[in-house]
Length: 101
Picture 1 (cartoon, rainbow, N blue to C red):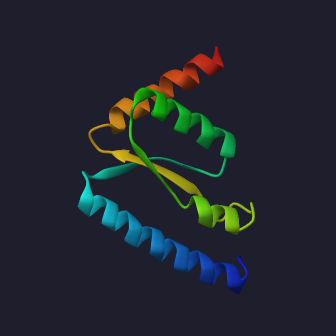
Picture 2 (picture 1 turned 90 degrees about the vertical axis):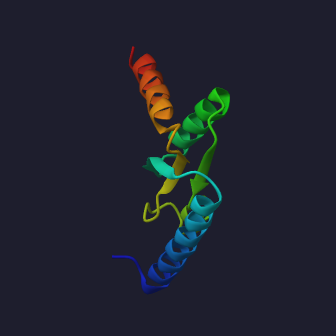
Picture 3 (picture 1 turned 30 degrees about the vertical axis):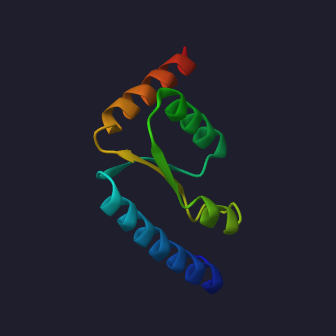
């Protein structure tokens, strides 16, 4: 279980990110979660793939995850617009397949 200080921070951060996400959803199309991870290499790779493909995305909980100190309590999330989520998933699957070869 997390210490009380981290639980309070985590609760506050989650409420803030939920409010932020709600604002993003109101201003744009519906967003869907593409991935949730604490792996910085995987996040960097996915961000580069999405940027190269021209798929806009939102990275949530980046700061909160860094502040909590690498214990893995708060995962970072990448969200994309719902009309791009299938394309983004195909892109990730193709990239993973090519890495496995």
